[in-house]
Length: 301
Image 1 (cartoon, helix red, strand yellow):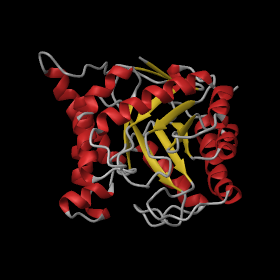
Image 2 (cartoon, helix red, strand yellow):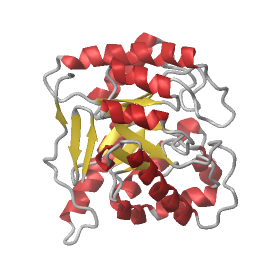
Image 3 (cartoon, helix red, strand yellow):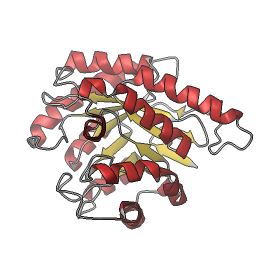
Image 4 (tube, helix red, strand yellow):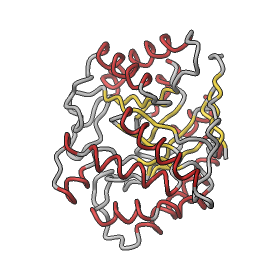
């Protein structure tokens, strides 16, 4: 299975990719705006890259429940300079640089980010009515993360008892629409949308049923890092959720997740590499991977 994102190509099976989170927002639930300013955001992103992040996810609008919407102009002001500086920093590096992802719901922001050097669009609003953003992804040959969520992101779990079937049907329908907009299947990653419009039981069901989504034959992204469902289950505050986040990451790897989105990159890389190594020693490993797998990067056209 192949995931293509502009000048990057990831061939699975291979070790899971870690997507490091860079919140360029003043109201992030996880860091409270610690990396809101340009230099702080860039320094944090470079640190995550050194810790092993192969994708850096840059976001300028908080998607936590109750967050205030961000105007297009302001979101552009937040994220584009960060992407430009990161792309310049990585351009002449000797080793394969991380791919830059833009975490946005706005087509205009996605376009500007791709023009600035991003290679992936991470869309928490993949449950959209028009195909403008998908056409931009197709135009740039970018990678695209389609996340499951209700139309309002946090409007509730809709009383769905069979969340596995609901999310599977959503992905099947989205894949058809995304392809019709010109985006090749090889450009698409699927995100279960842990914490978005789902109650505690549904989040746990999705984590437990992750293996079943492999039938869609697209890479699976798991984003459970520091999510509030951990507090609902264990009573852990945001800065106390690392152990549970790592547990979710390891369980995800065992079930076949291909990308782990994380705040704590160094710890996550160490945990999943250990898990992958042990799984590879099993006589009949549930998830095979090639330790020598590499991302292929080519200079920007």
